[in-house]
Image 1 (cartoon, rainbow, N blue to C red):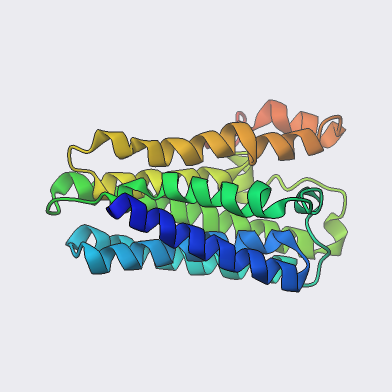
Image 2: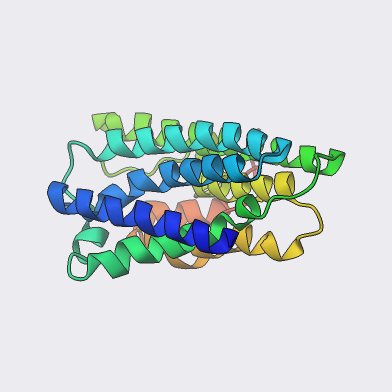
Length: 240
């Protein structure tokens, strides 16, 4: 029954945002809906399945979701629609909103199947989430500052966290969801589908591959690639 309820909640939520996208005439609004959707899912599951793990999860996911939604909204509000979403204007309900709804359901499995009392093992999840949130939020702020400086046009950000990973924001995003899984884990191993889904999407589908392809042939980026790992942060060789 819980599975059916969660599927219905996500369907209704994403359908509502689809109609908002029609009014706004831009599909990339779905990125704003992404973080807020997980807040809704966690809140409703806490109501029907009250436990300390979900209460902590709601606090953490609310912090993450509001920051992400605000960041994306501010980034996009004065820009044209993301070309990736503009290409999907035809049948966008299926190709954009329902597809993301399915991924939202899969990623939220640790939340919608949270059981048991809090143990020391679950507390590791809070530490993992904190590391991920630090990387994602700081990396986003560094990139925003870099882009807003007109002197950096055409250049590649290679300082701060971006000197440790070519995609520190994505590393943070993935780490956050592994933290949520650890926090809600209790012998329900199959819920590992959640963090594995976001890891696969970012590493192989809609995250890193698209950006790496965008900079193919860029001489500065090719040099950057030789020094800095693509995902997991590593202190660059020769750094002091």
